[in-house]
Length: 402
Image (cartoon, rainbow, N blue to C red):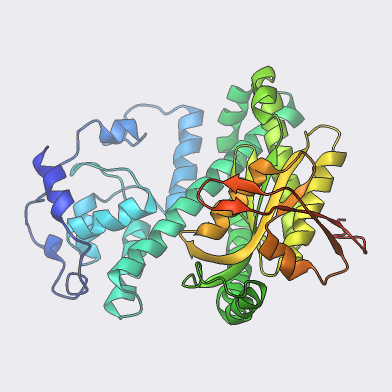
C-alpha cells in the first residue's frame, strides 16, 4: 500500500476546528502529506496542464469558450491555491471535491477557476457557522455531485439522440455539434434546474417532515401487532414494476431499439407515478422502484402500471407488487424489510397483475376502489410463509392520465 493510500485510510473527516479560521494549513508553504497524483491525471481527464500553442481549430475554440462559460472563467488555479483561498487544508478540500465526484488532480495541474474557490468556501462557511456538521456537509455535497452527474449524462444523451433523429446525422457528428448548440441552452437549463430543485425541496419537506407523522399513524393502524419494522422512521407504500422477458428481448434488439424501449419504459413509469402522487426512487434496467404516501395511492399507481404495460403495443407486460410499511430513507434510496418483501412479491406475480401482502390488503379492504383476491401461501426467502393477495380494480376509473 502506498503512503498516500495509508494516509487516507486513517484520516478522518475534518473537524469543525479544521474548518475554522486557523484550520487552513494549506495557506502556508506546507508540504502535501498525501503526495501528488500521477502526472497523467490531467491528460486522462481531458485537462491541459499548459495552454496549447499555435492556432486552435474551430472545434477547440468552441469547446474552450463553452468551458469558460460553464466554469466561470479560464482555469488559472492549482488545487493548493484553491484550498488556501478557502482557508482549508488540501486534505479537507479533496474530501469535498471527491464528494462532488471530481477526479484527482496533481499539484501542477491548472484545473480550477475562482468559481471553484467560491463554491468550496460556501460549503466550508456553512460548517464554520455551525449550520452543518462536517459529516452532513460531506453527505449533502455528495448528493449534489451524484445527482447532477447523472442529470448531465441524461441531458447530453437526450440532445445527441434528438440531433441524430432530427438532423439526420451520425451519432459521432451529433456529439461534435453539441459543443456549438449547447451554449444557446445553458441559461434555460440552469433556470429550470433551480426552479425544479426549489419545487422538489418544498415537496420533499412536506412529504418527509410535515406529513410524516400521519403516515406513521396509518402504518400502525394497518399493521396492528407487527412491531418488527417499528423502529424505521417513515411509513410508505413501496412498489416494484418489472418488465416480463426483458432479458430475452434485449438480446434480440440492436442498441438503438433497446435504448428506445428502455426510455419508453422509464417515461411511462415516471408519468404514472408522478400523476399518482408517488415518487420514482430509481430505475434499474427493466425494473422501477417507487413509493407513495398512503396504501391507496400506492395501490392506484400499481394498478395503473400493470394496466399500462398490458395495453402497450411495444412494451411487454409487467409484474407489479406493492407493500405498505415502514422504511428508512437515505442517500436518495430506501431500505428495510418492506422494500425487500415488495421485491420478493414481484417475482411471484403473474404478468399483468399486482400482488400485495395480507397486511397491505387489510389496510385496503374497506376501500371500494380495490378488490382483493387471496392467493395460495408462498414460502418467501427471509420472510417464511406469507399470504399473497392479488389486487384488482374495483369501483372508479383509477388514475386519469392526460
